Length: 366
Image (cartoon, rainbow, N blue to C red; front, side, top):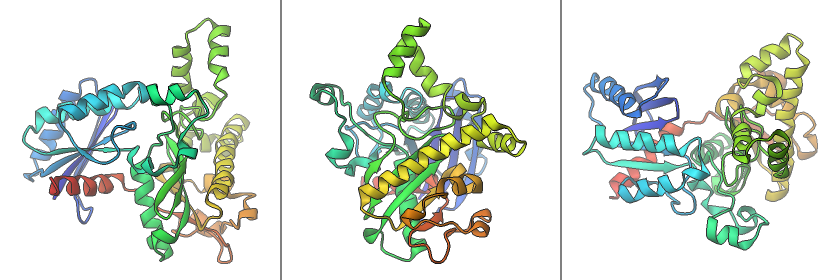
């Protein structure tokens, strides 16, 4: 099945035409500086049309499905309403995802379309992991709980890690670090998500490009009162002006790395904060899993930054983690030393192939 995978962001629309079984890319690209998603989708229609290839189905990446949607789902008016209701939980993502869906339904009115949710993989979280210690009414009335994100990537990479290790996924305890501009970690036990770093929204957890990750909630009210701004404005800063950007003025790790190589101490501290947070989660997740077979790095930073991988793994020998310098520099599939009891892997993610597979399955089963 030829599946057009759409990842509609606030300022760009990425697309890939994927053969769902093999993962072969038949076409792909990105429309940048998007103001009108309808116009952007018309560009995609034109680009795909030039190939004279039929689109059998469309798969949309959607960030937040809340506790309403726990699996890839055919798009209809009811699902669109659900995604719209969940906008407050993912204000940077769901509006853009929704705009892409609505534009695609106009552009391809007869093609079946499926929404694949970042939160779906984390439906297996146990209550002890997903419940917050807040008044029960917050949970029951407002759905305040941990949802988790990047699930499509975490699920795909876990399966590929099992292939690399040559062992059944059902037997493995894995820690997957999806490190990109957005970053999250998941403890995967027997192929099931049992703990993850992002929470109610994609703001919680690791330090990211522009997001703070974990922070004392009291800081929001304190800064709002001290600065005379609204709490909403402060939250916007935590989402858009914090993380690496807030620490050193650059959100792109490549720029941060160049500054470090030039001797910039501010950039070096920013990277230390970034890696320290990841290392702290590794320790926590080893405890949650009761041991760990492999630490798996993926996504843009995880796959390409030997510096980050080395800094994260430094000092983790107590968990049986030891990185071979040469293997790490070459970004080999296995970068741990031969005698390390916990393997360290670099596994490229392929969310488009995963979305295409799941879309095809939903369409085939009706």
